Image 1 (cartoon, rainbow, N blue to C red):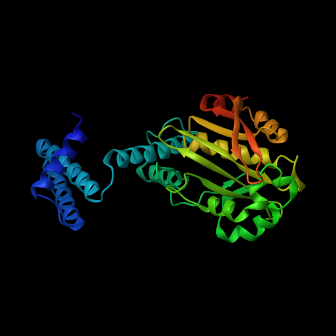
Image 2 (spheres, helix red, strand yellow):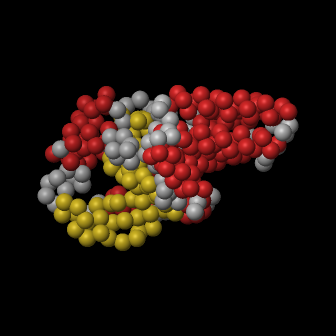
Image 3 (cartoon, rainbow, N blue to C red):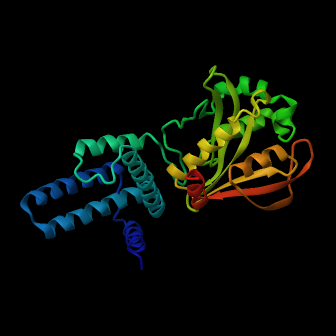
Length: 311
């Protein structure tokens, strides 16, 4: 039996028997008590008692998790993912500073790197980090889509060239917009507006969606750009910003693209990025205008991305 399972079963048996915590403050007091004991044994050098008190501290944290009705394994997995993302970010920041290792760096310097890594954000199985995610390229910036963007996006998206393969933008814009605003756990996605850095205007929208932390995959899509800047590299720059974040920060193994089989322009753009065509999902979706759409599936894997960025 795994140690977490055994501890969980013991907690349930104790609770059923009536030996249980009544408030979270009681558990917090126990945690503070364990910390004081640990501090004392760090000073007196009693290693056996130190190990015992550290074990009691871990048990108290486990009890708080159970008391708060959180799944313990999911909570630990989220914590591991969070640390992994931030540690990989620290490695990249160190490389940018020309450092192969952080050995020899002061604790204050380590904390500066840690705080920079925290600002990059991360994703758990149910939430997106509280930091607003802004991705900046040479001529565009991706910013979180918000309610304040409703009027401008509705006005821009009404163009026939944009809504040709996305009739929801024209026929059911409110439904499209409200879905874009949804946050985890209701919808595992991050929606963006695309802003031109040349004149600060909004020129489109895109998003991460179907984000699956457990299996380390997500999709990029719902992308549209105003026709006036088609062919100027904005869509490519947008996709590259998302791909870089997906692979280098979120540590995804796979990024997917689902494209209307009729949309030759988008299919060519995705293939130009280096995505592999995997097949066609026939009669995959019924669009808002009644058209039954075939969907072409493309993907880029982590190892392919590593090769592409070093070409």
